[in-house]
Amino acid sequence: MLYRVSKNPVNSQKIFPNILILGQWYIEYDNDVILDYQNAGTPDEYVQFQLPEYSLWQHFWNPDTQTLDNYNKNKDPGFIQLSPFTICKFYPNGTNDFDETYPDTYVPPDTGSNLTIEEAAYEINKCLTKSMIDETTKGTHYELYITEGYDTGVLRSIVNKHDLPVNIRDDAKHLHWPGAEYHRLCGPQQKFLKKYCEECYQLPPQPKNLISGFMGGQEMVRWPISLMGMFKFYDIDYLDELEKGIDKDFYCCKFLYDLGKVVTWHTPDVNSIEEAKEYASNVLLHTSEMWSIDGMNLFVPYRNRDIHHWVLALEPQALLKHALESSLHEEMIKQNDPKVLKTIRSPKINRSKENSK
Image (cartoon, rainbow, N blue to C red):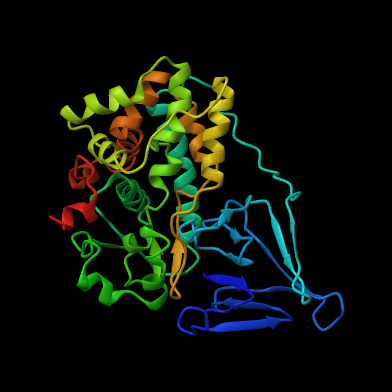
């Protein structure tokens, strides 16, 4: 699903097969987009865009070029990310209106506090299992491409435990990107997105209906910036613990430490543990990794707003253990199908970096 609103169109039918000219605006979009066209053919007509609840994508706006899209992720200069609760309206006379008063009605689960790994894993398993059963029993034939990582490992263990009608595929786990073979298999939108969204090359290009482990690291709160605010109040030096974990071959440590050489991890400016948890939730609310493109139907079970609240309810040392070792993932697999643990590659690797060697 890709769309773009501007006064200077891209004019690429491979990327945007549809175009609506609304006065001064060119609204380019693919076949997965259902336009919200209000009062069509009247003096009060306009087109509006509003993100779905807890969306897999976000809105980006460039006030200088007057361009809105759902893929830029601040890669091009001048783009800013809008609040996910913004309703974007475009009028034929070339004006627009961004209304940020759309209410957030979400109510988080009553998690309690100081949970053990086993307790939190049980609750998150329930979240994922319900959505997996609901989605895969609708008659759509899904495929799950395993990657030797914990995120898809948990999903595989749920498929096994509940005998879900999902085809497990492992033929893409060694197909590293960027590579000529992988690039050849990608559709036009996936190739287009490589400039804006590096996660797009972690998307297997072959299937039409795919269950993905996207958002597994984010929603399960292994992302340093979401953790460091809380560890500040738990008197834990996260970066020091991360470095120590490399010598112990902990699952996440080398991957995140190397990434920290490119992305600077910093402790957010928060004044209480409650603010730190709210900050972590807000990071997720504004996060996007990947969504359906090139006609693919992409199902992302981890994009569930309840999940991270169970993680944030862990007692401090359990949260640190999970942050470094993916202990929740390991426990969830144990609760579902322990045999899947034999398929996990540890420590976690950066496949693009490995491929460059």
